[in-house]
Image (cartoon, rainbow, N blue to C red; front, top):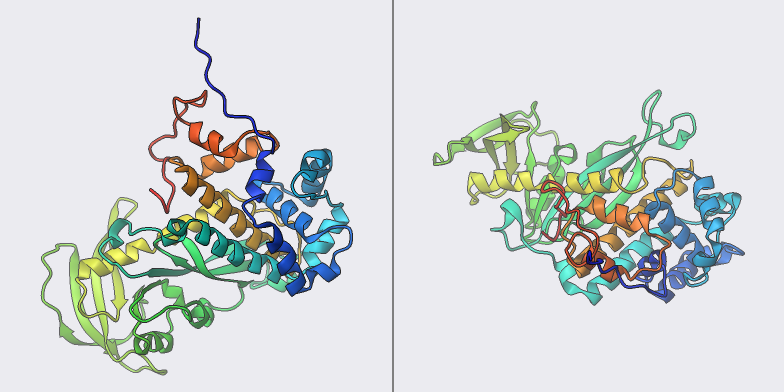
Length: 409
């Protein structure tokens, strides 16, 4: 007889409840009182609002009707999630429009702090990739753009026929979790937000900055604070070469110089290091120019640090292509902020689940598994432990190019 595979353990709670249970019970009520959301809530409570937003992300719902109709059809299992109730379409839309998005923002940081206390290794992360030789914290500063509908979202217009919202972020390279986030319109230049993003960086730490954030006055401030920075040089930068560094043994390093700006209109670093290196992009080597204020690092270390900056692009790709950020559940600025902050919160919960279960497959696969069994009463830990192994009937392993989850492998 054919041996029957062992199925995951049954549970009293559905998957949605087990995911939402990672959020401490009194936390939502406390933040709702502080932000004034509790005073605005009547029938649609703040906890129900949070659960609804989490469900919209986990189920990849494409509209308000999609979210509300589905939750109404599952009102019984939904009530088991600490008494959450299904909203009406108008009630959900009004909550997204009127309730301050500061509640979702504070909830994200509070849950991040709570999970860090529960599992210190989750937020500590580890050194990885080309940055393994650097022991101190490394921060990555970049932005991503969400394309919006111009005729519905006048507040986000930044061109004649286009509208967009920007998410500015400072990401910790060790744990690949956000340290600072700003959600705003795409109308202003990135360097207007550079000082806010780097305000929390301490002396001795390293910050990798996208060249869109380059502001030489800000880079000088980082110098004076003792912060090391690496960025890419703009093509039209006028400079003077003060000294050529010793020739590197690495054939990929074309030039290594100490420079200063020729005619700075604003305060600028007194000395900068300019490195030209060959970098492989899509299988083709291209010469790229890097700037840094550290004069002791090897030129290869500087080039490797900038390559690590692409980890934030992997982060943006995961939250934009997997979670629900393509279809907006509201047209005003507050609703968009609610949706982005809740997407970050759900991403945080999934990352924590992957950490405690030692998940060895891709983030996309973890998301699709949970979405498929969202209302099933299966033990979540046992499901993730058995999936993709010989312990159960889930034997289809991820392909080698998919079995990658940034932050833990």
